[in-house]
Length: 185
Image (cartoon, rainbow, N blue to C red; front, side, top):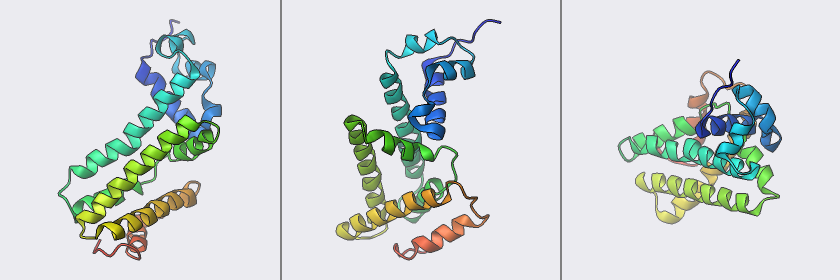
């Protein structure tokens, strides 16, 4: 049976899925090519090295998990509606949430990856600050609350990564957020 032709995006999406489940140990070209039903050589058509592949996967994650969320939130009217949309998107259960945890571990040995993570975190924090400014908070308070919110978000996902969220989890999240961000959600 002839092998499939897989484009660069197909390789990247599969690599993203594997990295989110197994970290860097999941990025085994031979195994991924078998799962994609293509030859291993097609990998080298798109990527010079495994490191290039990992960088493409990280760029996909940035678009998928940060830029896409910002775009969806910005499609709502500024203020409360944007912030509620933001909360709904970032607290949603996602089978690829472990990506960031594996990436943080991988970055320990890769300074350049750590720098990319720092930039993504800064972009996310700046976005949260903007959301809070739009809700009427002063800049210093918005910065502090953004850091608390982001830490809560990371902790929430760590807490529920292997547990099932309750049916009313969004109400629970909103109630918890009200303790440090005063808004009628």
